Length: 208
Image (cartoon, rainbow, N blue to C red; front, side, top):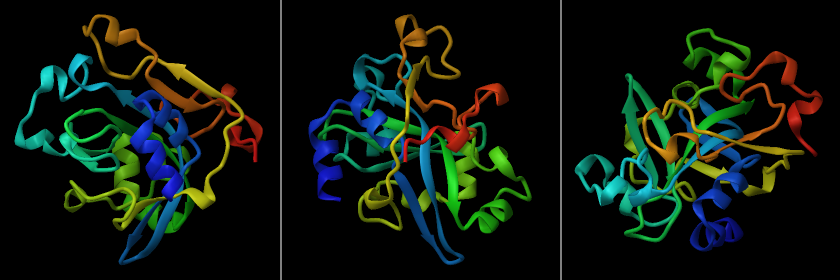
């Protein structure tokens, strides 16, 4: 974990987003451990990024966690869905990565239950879906992705064969930020948002 913490403290948000692809994300719940691999995420670059909640150094109670230290969990609600983000820069530099897609591995039966019976890619191929599948609640706001019940497990990390950089989803009318390729995905993985079946690869796009 020390290497991961160091990476969060020294690298750019874009590099951290790519580094998170293949990282094992685990939530210890009363129903048991729920876990799997991050396969789709988006970088948000703070004050200059018109799509970021901290654009222009906006600082409200809602975005308070964005100004905390690297690894802080930032949760917000969009269209009734809770969305998971991780802060990626030193305190006072409000940048982060939104987790958009997740390949479930452990506790799949419980995740299906959390998702009201949905199976396959529908379990977690979107940011709100994966939060619901993992049983993440607002109580985790401001906690650390390194030490809380929701945490990264670098020992279980997998390596993508190929990482694709794409424009972020759902960001119209933000000038250059609408098309800037700040979304990173594991090429060929079925759990990325809006994946086409023809593009799904054997072994889900993993090298190992």
